[in-house]
Length: 187
Ligand SMILES: CC(C)(COP(=O)(O)OP(=O)(O)OC[C@H]1O[C@@H](n2cnc3c(N)ncnc32)[C@H](O)[C@@H]1OP(=O)(O)O)[C@@H](O)C(=O)NCCC(=O)NCCS
Image (cartoon, rainbow, N blue to C red; front, side, top):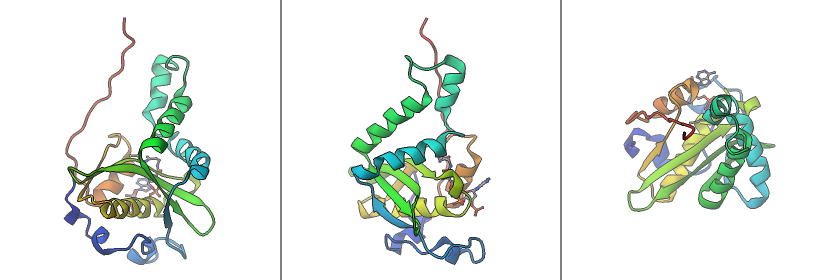
């Protein structure tokens, strides 16, 4: 878990964030900050497309297929679609849009008893990665969760996902546990 004070920028900023370029001059050549809004059902098809394209190189679901084949005939894409459909039913889906299009998505929910936000997915469209959108989307989601009452935020990330882990570390997240996902075909 992360104490809110480790993410000082999220404490005062409004939902529409300052451009990341303004925080690190010269790093990104972007005129506009992302605009954030909660997804509506009409957005879901595009969001699903972005999530599958973004996670394709990193998801462990694919490794299951390589080792075990599709699970009961459902390959990793179908399983991701089921996962995303469940997320649409149960979580907040926050969109990050630039001037013209959807470039980033974050999903999650807030446990009101613990005041703990859980971010399940963070993704940037493959062609837009490496330009600061991931950091901006993460900050936007933390602000959104703070507005929903969260004092803390938590997430899981594969140990080998260096890009994402260095993002979280640099945003003040601290590693509190590392788990292994095991799978067996029941004999
Ligand atoms: C992880 C992800 C959300 C980051 O978004 P992004 O827009 O590509 O990243 P940003 O441009 O905002 O960069 C943020 C930080 O990520 C790290 N990073 C970005 N690109 C990187 C690369 N090619 N190699 C290593 N680290 C990288 C850096 O720490 C960077 O900070 P810096 O620019 O100050 O060095 C995005 O790459 C993505 O959608 N990946 C696929 C899905 C995924 O892995 N989601 C997270 C699952 S937990």
